[in-house]
Image 1: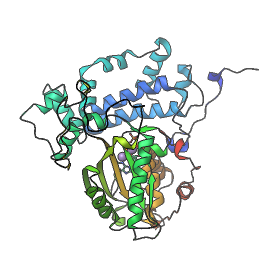
Image 2: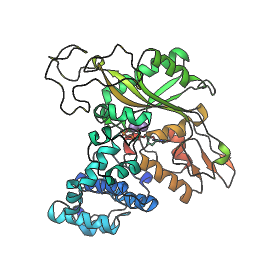
Image 3: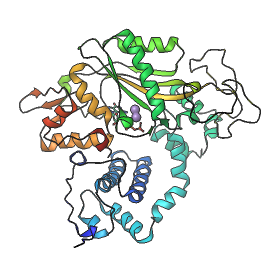
Length: 407
Ligand code: 8DG
Ligand code: MN
Ligand code: MN
C-alpha cells in the first residue's frame, strides 16, 4: 500500500535543538523565501518587535528544514510546530503559485537591496544602514563621497575591503588559516589546540568568516596566548585589522545576565590571505603585484586606485593597483579548558540552535546554558562537561552532530 507523504502523521518536537537539521533538506523553495522575510524583518526598525517578527520566519523555516520530505499540502504545514499565520500564508502562495508575490516585491525593492549592501560593510549594523537609507544614500560611493559621514576604523576598512569581505570564504581558505594559526599557537604553547568552528564545522563549504576556537588542555596555559599570537601575525604582516576584547567572564552573574554574547577573550580580525597560497583557478594571469592594463574588476569598490593601507597596517611598499592578498574575516576565541566543551557547542552554532538550546535549558530543565557553563540554580551547581556529548547529556537531549545543528 502506498501512502502519500502528506498523510504520514508528522511528530516534530518544537525546540530546534531536539531535532535534526541538516544543511541539505527537502524544502529549500520555502525556506529561501522565509529566510528572506526574516532578513527583511530584521532590517526594519522597532527593536524587539522587529526581532521577534524576524525570528518567527526563521522558526518556520527551521521546521521545514527538519521535515523528512517535501511539503506538499498546506494542511500538513498547519499541523507543524512554530509556523505562524504569516509564514503559513507565504507557504500557501508558494504551494499554489510557485512563488510569493510579497517576497518578490521585497527582492525588487530599494530598501531590501540597499540594506543588504550597507549591512555588508564590516562594522555597519542595521540602524546605521537604515539611517543612511533614509537619508537617500543608495550606493557605496554615496557613502564614500559624503563629507558629513565619519566612519570608525573598522567601518573604513569595511568599505575599503568591501569586495573581499563579501566574497565567501571557502573551506580550503579556512583550513589554510586554521593551520597557519595553529602553527603559531603551538610554537608559543605546545599542546594548545586550534579548532575550526562556526559554519565550517557544521559542514558548510563557504562562510562569511573563519571562527577559530583556541584552548589548552591545561587550564591557565591559554592565558596570554592571544596577544602573543597576534604579535607574531602582525610581525609577519598578516593582519589588515584586529580588535581584541579582554575576557570579562564572571560566573556569579550567570543567572542575572541575558547571555546572547559571551565573555571570552577574543579578537575580531581581518587576515591578509595571500593569493599565492591557493590556486582556485588555473591561472594564465600575471604574477601577484603585476597589473595588466584593462583587467581591473569593474565590481571592485576602488576601481583602478590602490587600496589605501594607511589604517590597514600595510607597509608603504605596497602600492600596486592590485594587492597580492584577499581580506578574510577571522574570529579568534580563547577558551579555558574547564569551559571548552560549552565554548565548542556555542561557537559551532548555529545561532538558532544555540538560542533554542538555551530556551530549552531554561524552560524544560530549569537551568542556565551559556557558551561558558551550564548552571543548575536549584542545586546551585555548575555542571562540568569535558565533551559536547556531556553537554547534551546534562540537558537530556539526544546528541546531535555539528552537521545536524544547521537550524
Ligand atoms: P557564517 O560565518 O558561515 O556566515 O556562519 P556562522 O559561522 O554560523 O556564524 P558566525 O556569526 O561566524 O558565528 C559562529 C557561532 O558563534 C554562532 O553560532 C554564534 C556563536 N557565538 C557564540 N558567542 C558569540 C558571540 O559573542 N558573538 C558572535 N558573533 N557569535 C557568537 O557562541
Ligand atoms: Mn562563521
Ligand atoms: Mn564569526
